[in-house]
Image (cartoon, rainbow, N blue to C red):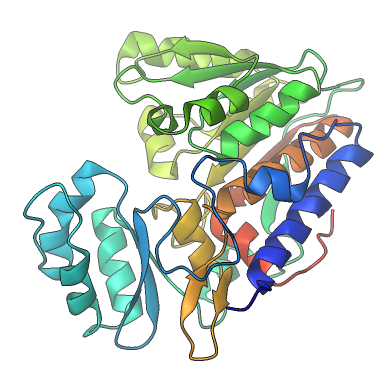
Length: 356
């Protein structure tokens, strides 16, 4: 990579376009594109070619026919490696050398499919369009989301004093909530006491910035009483932000469109790695590997890909989500919005102007 990074420049340009959209809707800026994409303590020089993510848990590894991003941020991930590629971790250290040896003999598509079946966040650098995009109807890179009108709109609806229930974690969803807070919304962040937001264990200043002014509510959703409490919150919310794979909501009996239909003007935004519909709807992913899946990488002359920024699909998606929610509210709401990290990264990689 030279002193210029086309992927980084494309990501910054995409972020700036989302910020411009927010500004046009009267939402104050939380910073420039560069400032928001480089907000975390982990962030270092974005112009350095890296096959290791800034967080250190994701690596780009060559396969028999391409490259895969292997992301192993959870302790439980190590227990799945023997079933995936026959590599065993001898300690809490990730056996990267063994994984590199195993992956070089296998094809990317097969590796990704086997990993995702086990719940591992593994993605391949794409080689073209795929059935996931076709089935979701998101082959148009200028509109990397699915928005549906549901129920009825509400006249006079604004973000000021709107009640937002945020079930999301990490970066994308909380950034969306953070931006809505600056517009006057009341945000209630819901966490399970047994599975709190994992970003609490990272950069605390960053976590506090994302959640400044938010209310926190702990609900054990695995219990009947907890589910009842959660459903009551969701029913009275003006805006819901969640980042659960569909099977998680299905298990709780929560159907987003049904909640939106019951309350005029409600907006429900789902932010997941691969979207709420399509053959990859229950695949797992995070900011770094989802960006790779979307083709938001820099590629050297010899074909070696490098990561772009720090978990870049997360802040890009959070910004876009906030702009879409604000736009929907301005029209009276009554909508579900389905955003996939992978598809937002793909849109940014193509340097396409978003068609709002």
